[in-house]
Length: 268
Length: 265
Image (cartoon, rainbow over all chains, first blue to last red; front, side, top):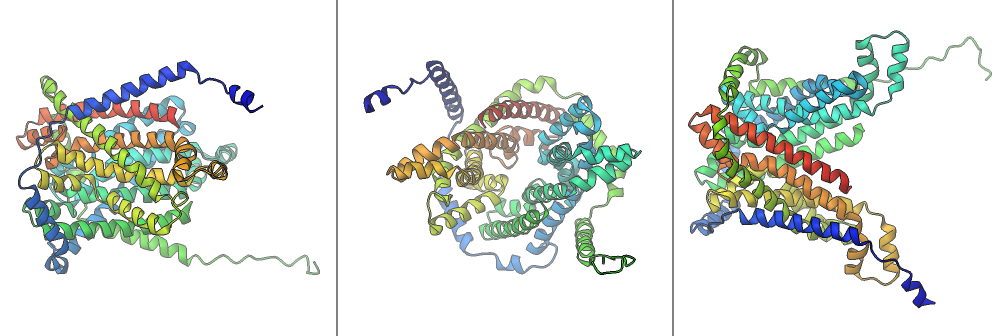
């Protein structure tokens, strides 16, 4: 009895196996190509010295810098980073709405929405660091350049998420208002926005979490925030200050993630 | 029911204090931030012609003949992203198994692993790269390490959440047949999460390509380094060409990767 049962198990399809092997070989060769192209020159002789210097800096935080409450101090840099993230998110939250409407199939029709979606993808692909460099040459180095960079770059993600939630909303409400003779702006303010507002807010908060991290790096190119003192500390090998900044950055981002996550859970 | 039918039922409006308070806090945060950062919309708009002048210098026309010199650093960027996400995925797999509380049912293991993962994810890749450049010197090695740590944190987090969301019936079925921990992992968990795991790895790869393109700005190899050098020497037409080439490279990689991911899950 047992014997017959076992022999009834069908063989695995062969074509499937060949297909899988081919994919496996392709992936493997891509990975080998990637490893092969990297010219590893060995670790610098100074690496171990630098590393022990870093460890030393890690355990001896720069107390003076933490206490410094002037413009050059840590507190000011952290607040500026948060301010850049909030302002940048706000700018993109507003700007993304028209982009999202333009990309939603149930608002502007299929053909136009494809154009809108493509524009949003283009914006998303453009790195925020390069945007920051462009804006620095416009408004000069400092926080406003960072805000503009985040504000434009985040349209790429927010526009996509907004338009997805507009496309999945209940169309009945829109039809009800149209049947009562409502015009386009009435449809927008009474049918579309009230339905999608909680999701919009939740996505915006999520983007704010991402922008916090981005705002911390914008300073590396001179667009304000904590990145600027951080890169100066690294370049001048002041490891105590470097790790003070990194640790404070981790704590700040974690706290903001926590608060924002709590609010997002309540919203949706 | 005995009430007079003329009596109207008047509903009291709920107190809107909390609503207005929240609005007030949000408005304060937004305006306070703009003020603190010195953001002035009028100044921005009045400088708008500067933007067009710069765009003109970058893209009208870009240095087409510079394309051949961009290809090598572009390939290096892609290679960095592949190695970073591959190594990240390799390490992420065992770690995410440790972080999943339905496989290792021990809070003293899950919690520390998750805290470490969270810390890794809060440090931006660019900051990691700048630190590694200081230790290991300028070049792609520092960039790869940064991408590796970043993708490790990202893939681990997504994977352990997937493990926790699996259909537990399969684990129980195989457990009732006397399977040990390893067999549970091999026959009940891995088959369920493998497509998602591969999808997350590809996603990390997409993010890595974007990140790798700018890592060079702090000296961590790839096309960003070429970019920074040309920007420092004010060869704006070359910078424009680099932006165009890397833009389309990222776009193409995204499309391919996203199509594979759609098939996977």
